[in-house]
Length: 343
Image (tube, rainbow, N blue to C red):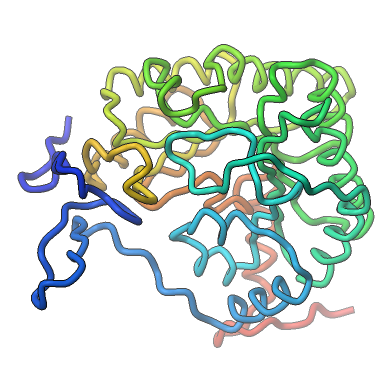
């Protein structure tokens, strides 16, 4: 097993630990706010490119919430440049206060029955190849907002035929009817995140439950099969919260036991001093090891790297993604420009 090099194994435990991205603090030269230090491998791509700026302008104009921005995702530049985005429905205020998450918590007062239609029309204008639809947790709603997920999927199918549709859902408090409603709408990928190992569920996720989340993934696939549909299920894990490699292996096994198809693994980076402390950084070689371990258990697709997040490379994970990738390559000239297909 890889042993991390000295100097990055554990973050200091002083009160001023990780703020906005993790790392130890070193005094600034001018005596001002201390600078954050990260391992050399924690380097996000600076957002740029025509696609990124075009998508940003369109999203602003359409007044859509995205997790990419709300959660300060480090991959926003890469994903938007590839025309993949994660749209957040049901407002921007969550009813849960998870210890790792940067989304605003409170009592939501926002609801709009027309949102699925507006989202679909907006996404059609964006020209996305793949869309991920997620939401804040809405425990204040009788079905947790499941009917809005379902209607959004149906509207997206009508407005954007051929586009990959993934939903990243809350647990709906384990209720059967809301999950059935979502699966009946036919998403390509049903994503529900375990986030961490069983021992750390309570401090990390608070109102969520380990068995409940595994049950969501298991029942989602069963409900799809009952309707004659095929769906890929997906979950995501953060590392660096104090878990052990043995606990992570046990989590991989637990996900495969419910036939989870896709796994993403990324480094936890503390959003602010109010959030859970970062225990240590994992070296990229460890992420490579974990990917190999997970694939050996039978996952169809695994993304594992320090800056990987739940929706990273999402367009490459849907059924038929490889064929779509080959078609994209076949329609590019040597300069990378799109060549119209003949006929």
